[in-house]
Length: 109
Image 1 (cartoon, rainbow, N blue to C red):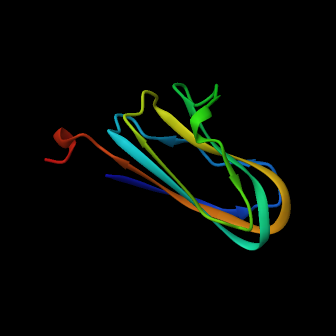
Image 2: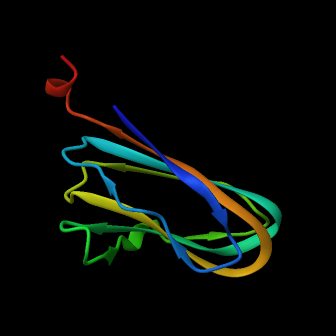
């Protein structure tokens, strides 16, 4: 299992997380936590095979209201890299998170 942290950052601005190399992950999940006063915006996961050119994973677009947390759970990634895109609308606070990728059984021996 691979676990990577999304460092706390100001949620009152448009931002991207760093790229996460999820390699040959069997499945992965991303948890985003918000703190502060009614942070509102949109989260979406993006995928890439070269860590340069990014494409939205359309099924992951999630509206965030009132500083709520969000959890994405995806099976069998067909790409090498993943990142989080945050589009700010209103409110003040921070966002942080965690990416967990489960490797195939052959890597756990």
